Length: 64
Image (cartoon, rainbow, N blue to C red):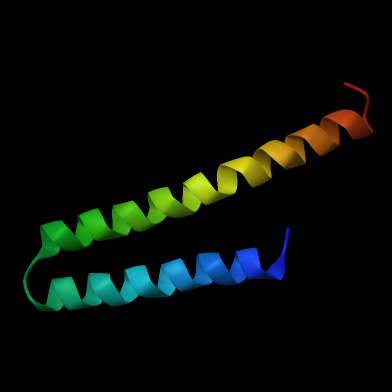
């Protein structure tokens, strides 16, 4: 896993947090929740290949 990958996840988190705060302050709680949910989904979609690679490495390490 690269350091750039961690920075990408952090950037998505910061952007999501700012958007959430702006939307909540303007009285749009429903859109704020959807924005937060979209941020979580984007990060999870980025993590799925990394988790798959981790499982493959563990599988090959223990000859399973």
